[in-house]
Length: 365
Image (cartoon, rainbow, N blue to C red; front, side):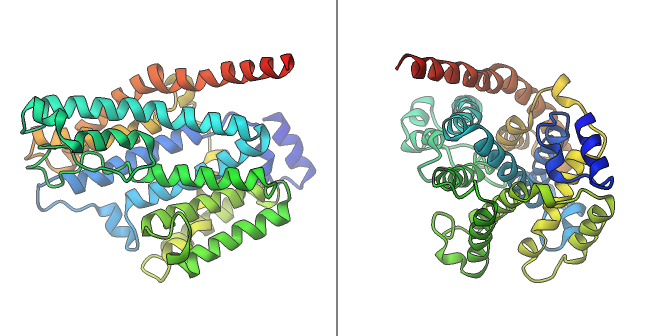
């Protein structure tokens, strides 16, 4: 933190987003964990059959709901962080990092989802379950290339929603965002601030003004929305040296975010306000050192929450949304911890070995 103090002293005691480059002590881990649990909370009202319960948080938001806000913030963070990874570490390490971060945890999640639902949640025979084409199509969700298969044969037929994992839809669009970003990086568009600003702003405005014509994303309204939040994260990274991190600006952004509720084009108009709030919380509020004690559980919580909530709903159909959310959270946090310790972190640790091997090959050629 001494580096930041020296920088802010030279700039009139105002810290800028770029002053936090390389600062590893921040709130990214707790913020992402809260966002993933917010999605779980929001989904508890979607999966529960119990009438008479209202999600008061989402009702207060008017233009959106808590799960959508959380996913939007996830994509802002992703756009910011992966742009930094690409700019600082280059294309090869960026691609390896993205693959190792997304696919191993997802693969294990899909396999466990198939096996667990096949054993305890399906109404068809074991043989019929594993020979049904739906099961194979669901397994192909591991690629994030084919169309997402939402269902498995005979599972959750008596639940409010029979989908196996309603959260998976965000992963294919995130991978597409990674792809577009790496193309921009390969052609050098991110190395010039002016060019990067013009290009990313043009993409953002294109998606806003002519959404149906947007390549890769325009065919799906939700895909388009989150990809534009990803673009906002990229813009914040590109302009980080000139974005002051001030409490009054954070408060103003928060007020504006709620003031614009119920007004036209809410997500687009308030996207920069949401991004500012996120980065202020990440860098300027007191740090909760969850990395030291828990690791990064957000991805595991995100991909395991819906299946766990569906199973809880199947076993306890009379539970209200709050009961479903609490029971599911206990289960999911445990699964996420196992996923982080035994799948995600070991996979990420492979990057150093792969890059070391790559460097040794370069030295010998």
